[in-house]
Image (cartoon, rainbow, N blue to C red; front, side, top):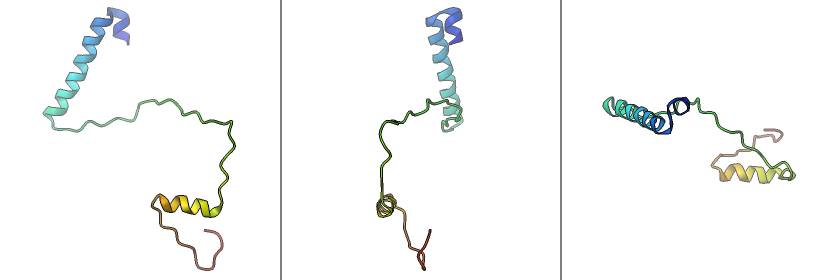
Length: 81
């Protein structure tokens, strides 16, 4: 934090606590709900690339979708989806 570098750890903690309390006070007085603004940068998820991809049949894929709550219907005349 910039405040910590300039004035010290204790003052930075007090400044941060004051900022949180001001936000909380505003939310309570105005009866508003707290909403994230979406500007939070998250770390990218690293996938394990050492293992091979899972081999699934078409029926396995259909079963996964059905178990997730999707309704699967076969088109009349067959063929692609």
